[in-house]
Image 1 (cartoon, rainbow, N blue to C red):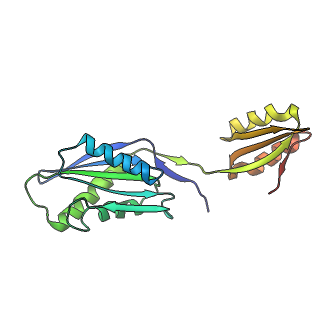
Image 2 (cartoon, rainbow, N blue to C red):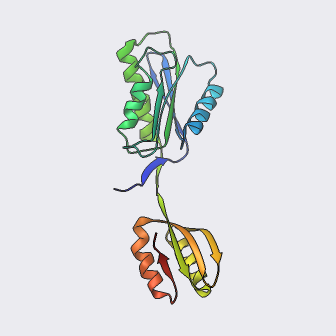
Image 3 (cartoon, helix red, strand yellow):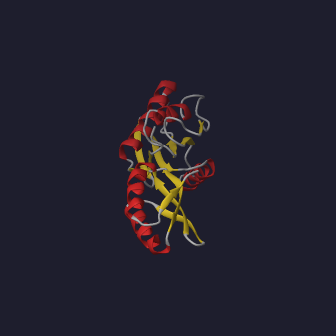
Amino acid sequence: MSKNYSVPDGSTEILYEIKKSKFIARFCLAANRSEAMKVLDQAKKDYPDARHHCWAYLIGPPKTPTLMAMSDDGEPSGTAGKPILNVMQHKEVGDVMIVVIRYFGGIKLGAGGLVRAYSQATQMAYDRAPTLLQVQLEEYELNCDFADEQNIRHWLSLHEGHVLETSYTQHVNVSIALSEKYLPELNNFLATLKGAHLLKD
C-alpha cells in the first residue's frame, strides 16, 4: 500500500452565508497538533469578534490518521466539530486543520441546520483548496567509489531524492532518502558504476 498522500498546498479560506449567519472556513496544512493549534490561534486573532471558532484536524494519512480531534466551541454538542471532521474523513487529504469561524446573523438555524452549514462550509473549502502529493521517502545506505559520488548526487536530484549524510573511508558511504518506486531504477543505475552498491539492512 502506498504511503503517499495529498496534503494542503498552503491555506485557503471561503465564506458561506445562510440566513444571515456567516461561516468562514479556513483550510490549512498541519503536520502535528502544535501546528493545528497555531492555525486556531491565528483564526481567533483574525476574527476576534466571531461567536464561534469551531475546528477539527486530521493528521497523518487520510485513511489511517495518527491523530484526530474536534471542537464545537460553544455550539450545541455534535453540530460543528463532528460535521467538519466527518467531511474530512471522506476526503483523500491528510495533515489538515480546518477552522470554521461563525458570525451569528440573528436567525437560529437549529441543530440540523448547523450540521448542514458546518458540513457545507467544510466541503466548499475542500472544493477550493489546492493540494499536493506528499511522497514518503525511504532511507537507504549505499557505498561507492570517490569518482562516482557526483554521479550519484546528480541521479538523485533527477529522481526527487537527496543525500542525508556522507562519510569517507576507503570508499564513500552515503545515506540517501528516495521514494520506494525509484528503487529498481537506482539498482540499475548503480550496476552501471564500477564500485557502487546498496548496503542491505
